[in-house]
Length: 291
Ligand code: SF4
Ligand code: SF4
Ligand code: SF4
Image (cartoon, rainbow, N blue to C red; front, top):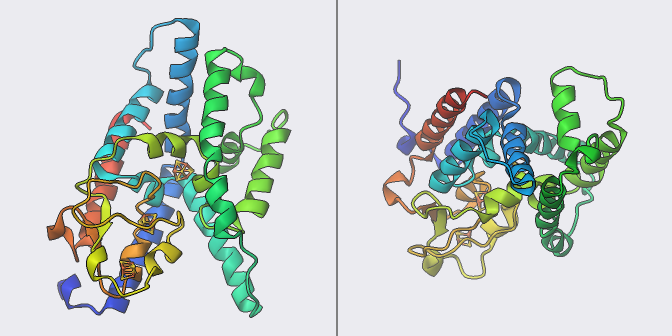
């Protein structure tokens, strides 16, 4: 059997390989490990509830998942968001289907403008603050049935007993039709409270993405335009890390000059293997954490 040597492939072939690999990892996590994000956010809610009640914070299974996922994100960036979160993958699938439908009809898709989405992106901090305050005050239970996440998790698990979840169902539909269709990663970028937690984490710069800005094509902003978060990546050597970067790696394949890479330059061109390594590592620690 012929050995796969990524370095011998053309840029187009590498891009195709990365796209298929990402789709495969997303599908596998979506099917077999869909509850990581709900478990981790249950940990966040539990911590605020315990603080509000003046109770001890125990190392529950949810808190363990939260700690492990945050530690992984501090080291590798938001790889979980880009590749393994079921709700993020749902958004990717819906947006891709919406774009495909317009392509079929040979029409331009209706999309939210970058100006609007830039402003909306602060909403996730408000959502996180409101949930944290409700938990702290011990009244989050009264908001039961309003979470689109919970509704999605129930549907994913084949549980259609949605009595009492009408607000959550309506919100989920609104997010799908009015958000996920019109903007790639709409929920992640603008509304996700877990995404707000991740974006506030102090991510280490080793595996974060930077670009060789000095040698960029004059006037080029291809990577920023392709980025679902609209990020203009920091320069090489910078210690700045973009908390809103989902590590989807689309920018890497977009750049015609191959200027985008992690802080560890030895990984340049080996993103394929590094992605597999991170996906396996995440799987192992999630199984260990009992998800
Ligand atoms: S931002 Fe939230 S919904 Fe999006 S991928 Fe991350 S955890 Fe999942
Ligand atoms: S396109 Fe690049 S900068 Fe934008 S979210 Fe994906 S990995 Fe991060
Ligand atoms: S796509 Fe490449 S050349 Fe263009 S701005 Fe981004 S890093 Fe620079």
